[in-house]
Length: 133
Image (cartoon, rainbow, N blue to C red; front, side):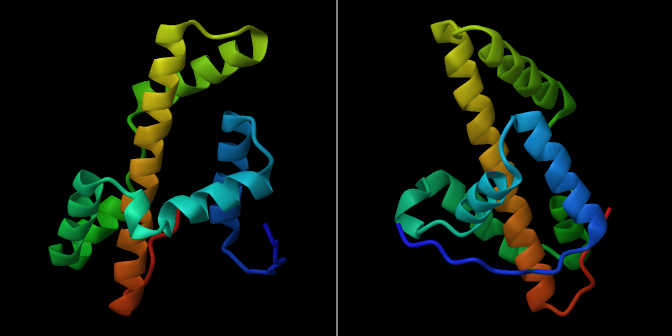
């Protein structure tokens, strides 16, 4: 795969969120950013029909509701479970149940990222200021 380097300026709070997520997921920042962009901009044939439909509903939301989606996070208990399973994975092989749960949580994380990315894109298309933590 050919790789292209890009310099992008992003708000510092967003960069810090990216750093925290990379630490939490035990991934290099560049890998997490690449995965996040792949999740936000996947080819349509790689997204399940149910997720495509869910994302399509965002087009009809007003700006306030889009901001809510853009600022949404994975449920705290799921974030904690994801962190715990990633910690366990670094210490020992996961059981089949644990590995299955980890994959479910990663899929949910991806769904949240897709929704957030679409909400940000719609807000930007509408000329709305983007929410930043």
